[in-house]
Image (cartoon, rainbow, N blue to C red; front, side):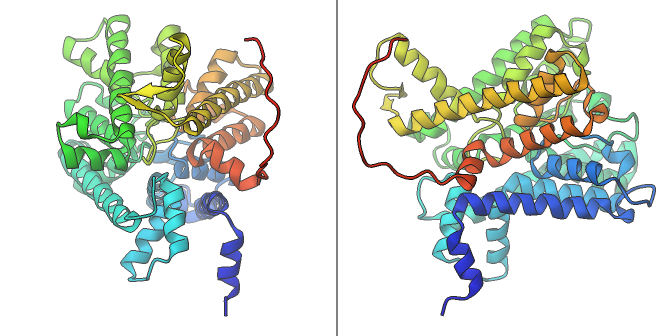
Length: 444
């Protein structure tokens, strides 16, 4: 006899389970952050502040309305860290990992849910993949914390430095952008470590590692330098990621930071090229960048990381397919092609749809905030891109925004992390149409 829990799960699609799971974690986290012992003051926190923080942490964004280090107690920071880890790995991945640790048998429904959650090509081997994700995450975060520990221990003392190291490592690998450096100056992020090579290098490597995607890492570990053996997706991710890091870094090196020493200039350029890929840390004041550099940063924030990663955004594969499809049209090719392979039409259509929806939400969110707050559109578009790309970089306006604008940012963060298609499939069940309509041409 099928129990009611199993029956209810069968009525929910994987997309609905993912959306409900994330939403449940957000509400649970907000409830914990409201509690008196979650705040430094020992008083109840505003629900709107707690909810915004919970959404930002679960959606691994990093936008905040209150400073993490000065507002939240150790317990509150621990809640935020757990929300970041849950959001980075994904609610479903974490659930499956706990089931394995408890020795519970993973059924077909859970395996299919896991496949949908991480966008796996097939259900075969999905449990081994979950173990691989869990192991890689633990090793990467532990290594990052240990390497940064001497730096932070010297600044904060051993035990506080250990906590800061762990928090920074998890936040960086999960591309979250939360930090505990506001005790020096509120909302200061990593500006105090702008010239520190250890903090810069480790944070950048963790951001890139988390944003590449676990499927790509499996390819890299299996095939090493033999790039031709990589799967098409891994090739696309690696090349696109490299281009989106080094070209902006070159621009920033020559267009910004000319008043800094040569070594610091390189660090600043590389870090500000890496961090918009949904990480959200900054070593320089974003308001100090020129309009052109901020526009490039907005584009990088919208693109985000790669499929099956801890990062958000429209994804590198969506951006790459949009560019490749445009080139195919320019050169009058019938199909979108990459690395000697033809891309399936349904995948191309999906990528173009995601690209359009992200651009639409980006503009719509920025315009609504601008109208509500009477602020310049360019500034509001920056915050909109940061929220939708789950980045966390800010021009400093987020803490001052009203409830409507904060709600817009929360919705954008949720869409950016869970995925616009996942949210759509969870709320709408389009009927399959088997009839083929007559074809007619339109002029472009």
